[in-house]
Length: 223
View 1 (cartoon, rainbow, N blue to C red):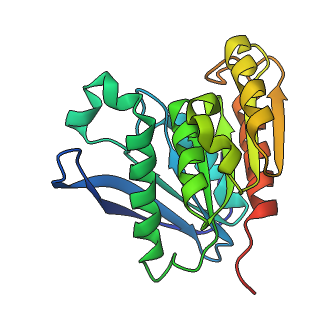
View 2 (spheres, rainbow, N blue to C red):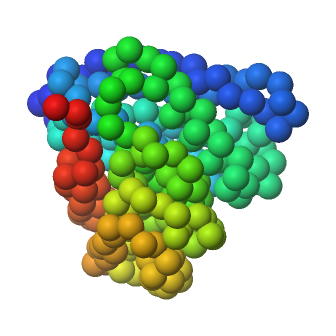
């Protein structure tokens, strides 16, 4: 994909707290089009990181819609070795909350409407974070596990799009169950022929297009 929108990218360090209460830093990559209409924070899935090629691709598509992106590691390298942390939705949601506070404190991003893009367990964390943070104006899940957000689903006020592969049958069933619990504006989009990782030809491109359209519709800078 060849970008036609000028984007300024920089490496950032997001302050957060370990389970012990000691301070830690989470590495990230903040990318802003020259005129950004919103900012999307990415919550990657289990076993992934800010370097996920799929999320990087989606971020590039969002840039073409004049949306900034923040891809960051939700766990430190040491934390990621413990699989319990990978599935600790509360912990992952708190890391997203730390990232929200981080961008709210930066001059270039403080006024931008915020969206959350989650994959796998990151989607549940995004929904939990959105349920607690009114600054989140839109959520998109790609191949996510929104069912793991539990009771937070009914408290999400942000318009929510669930994108699922048509051949990802178990996850599709779980998304349909979660969809029924969401009371905010919502949509369930099924990408034909796609499995869990959207590796089939054209399927990731379709998921990225759907996400970009959803965020562009629901993220608007204050006039």
